[in-house]
Image (cartoon, rainbow, N blue to C red):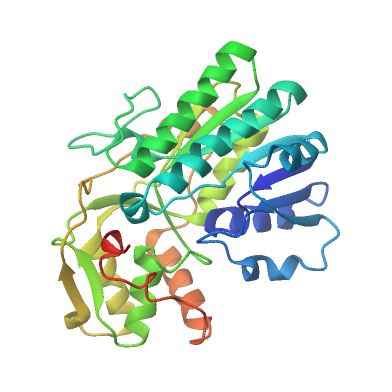
Length: 328
């Protein structure tokens, strides 16, 4: 299989590529990435000498480039996206370009070349869930610009399936954590700051709840869906690890033996959804997938990875900002 992965220098994309190549000697991967915020070439340094891996720097909105890459591939997995909600509050333009225009560009090319396409989406398209969990048929109800662009991309994919009979599937996952995550996200930021005995910003009172899944489990699910997911279907991916933000940070401080007074409560961001929750029984029943990593084991692995990174790692003040949604 010749697999084209977009956004493969990012957190989830790089882990997906590593897992696929580690477990499948008959697969070759071409990775196209624009090297925007969140991309890190060092994520895939270990593949520099791999004959099954090729890297191309480029943007998924570049139709000429993408046509060449897709023409020479069997299927496409689209991880490429602007994904940090806070940045979408400051300026949503790049989110519209990457998440909507980029998806449209791929769909237009696939319409002519008839390749299988996996669109990576998010639980945020459903908005906040007061009770229960969203299944695949739940109403889309995005409440921030990032989520709105991902919901728009889903609608585009579904429209191309219905209109042109394209072989597309959509995946939606809950909050990921694990090695190679960009430091502006809660878990790696908290570990990095605690390591240096610096204040860890927590929005509001830290009561926002997310279902946390280890990145390798997410990648395994995406690969199963790539191989066996049904045309035109969407699949929710979750791990049943619902925890609020303050509990996450307290666990990190406990493991690192750091004091709780490193926690600093800051102004909450506008429109911050209280709780996300997905029902993933469809993929568990139909594709025989289940998460394999406990939260505690995954968190320890993540902490070990962050602690192994050099202190000199290039991390800007914007990334570590306590209220990045205020940054201009």
